[in-house]
Length: 408
Ligand SMILES: *Cc1c(COP(=O)(O)O)cnc(C)c1O
Image (cartoon, rainbow, N blue to C red; front, side, top):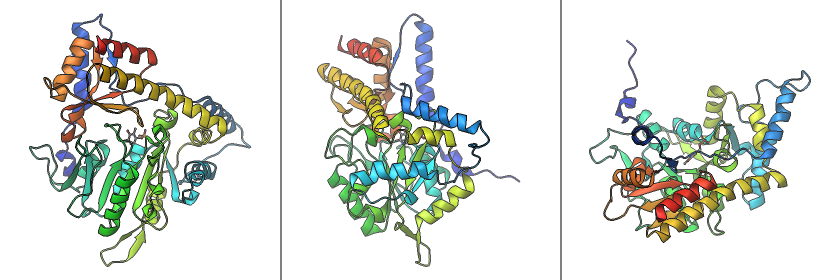
């Protein structure tokens, strides 16, 4: 009898984006001539930087000639890419991360989802609320949680509330956990963790022999000088933290697929007999067994952003979205909304008005009256109720039009 992994049955259907699509389609069919503007998408829309296009075309030509053809590459990623990442994102910022601590992948979603495999199923997890759903769902699948309760929480999970009161900065819990998922800048709140917050987390991790899983997918959007772009900017992080990065939001690679993970060599976990084992060794074993490398062409495209020209093109791309974010932020504020995020992130997190507190009711109202689609905050966790996410990933034109509609 082929029994299934029943942990999968603990997961509710992926209700959020299908429900948004359903409501949008219904409204459009009833109002066929209305132009709906979508500020709900968590996907980039601008074309790839020219340096990436040129590098990938060149690499494609290399694949077409017997002298320069490449088959399987190193599973951990080509050193031409790992060396550049170590240099640009870490060494140049004074951070002690070397190329052999970097593992290239086909994107951060897989890394964020797969990392839990190298931890014991006994490990207790802590997850920010609201946040990117991948961390929780993959732990449910792995059996690291109990069942979903009526209050919207899974048994056995420590939720870290991110609220107005704590500036959307999750605080270390009073109980003991082993794996802590943090995301800064955060999706969906668009807010960041400052140096003090990260120092507190590192102190907690050291005290409790826990590991911080730090998702920095939006690091490139940080504009404020005092906000850490990497957790390794904090003393002691090398002993307790794994970092996830992606080219998706940095360089428009959501459809091209490239990301990476940093596991410092001295980061260890313990066996049941108390022996310390480096997590990097386990991840290398996993990666070489289950993954055969990101395509050569893609890695060439990713490496191209690490030049003066590449960095300038990436900055232009990010500045475009950040200008959209600024326009949304200012327009909403002028219209009387309370807004968060949008300064160091492509996401604006707005408080729903007092007369329509429910995220879904606000969704319906915005769709009906302004023909704008956003994402109900409650879809990212129970603490997201009463909030709404707008993204800056649309065109300038549509962003301005949406803002004008809101201001009217
Ligand atoms: C988009 C995103 C990622 C990256 O996804 P990719 O698989 O690299 O495209 C990771 N974490 C968060 C929070 C994200 O929003």
